[in-house]
Length: 258
Image 1 (tube, rainbow, N blue to C red):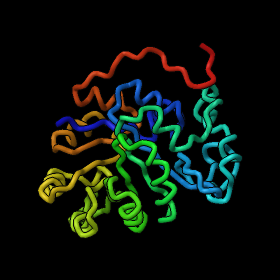
Image 2 (tube, rainbow, N blue to C red):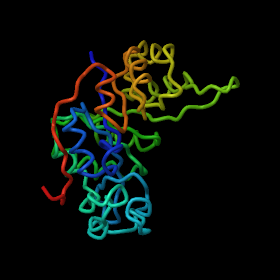
Image 3 (tube, rainbow, N blue to C red):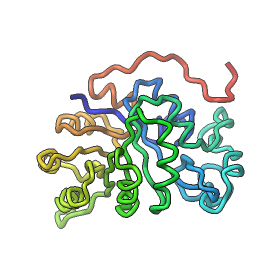
Image 4 (cartoon, rainbow, N blue to C red):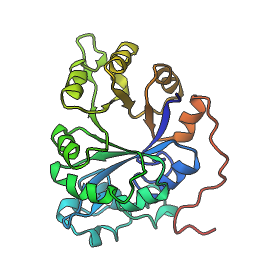
């Protein structure tokens, strides 16, 4: 089985993260899936955005949880990357999944458990889309296990530094995933070695990782049988894994002149 190439916030190395431009480019480049981050607006709309505030991407300080979707969806969140992306807006989860409803989607839950019910309502419109729910927040994942029992959940974790100065992942993560009936883990790649990958596989769990942009690292991780690698440059990862991306020509963002 090929290790899947997952576009981190879309093809975020080349287009503004978590926008339709970035996700569209990822699909054009032949990515197997896309990763995205979700928050709730003040009126419980499921929106795709990484930060809890819009300052970094829109240049204006609005907290998503305290602002209506109508206000948030008016913001320009593309110009910070390049002027030609000026038409990019914060998308809803529906819009992103509708771009390629059959493609793999890793949806990172950036909020508390209250997102479970609104998320279940959105995902009911995409029963055939292979969605993986990922989060640092175990409590949120457990709420989704109840509201969305058909959607597999994965615990995200950062690497920790050992006494020898090297990053690693504790085997306790595996026990935690098993104890809570999760489908697998999505740890930072720097803490993964061959032994950890083998232990996850032997436990019957799946293993994804982030954020992989180096071709040599991608080849090493792919040789260990991981389910997926998440990176900012999907075409680069496809090439590293010996899978040539399609020649899709020049990508045009929304609002660009032909």
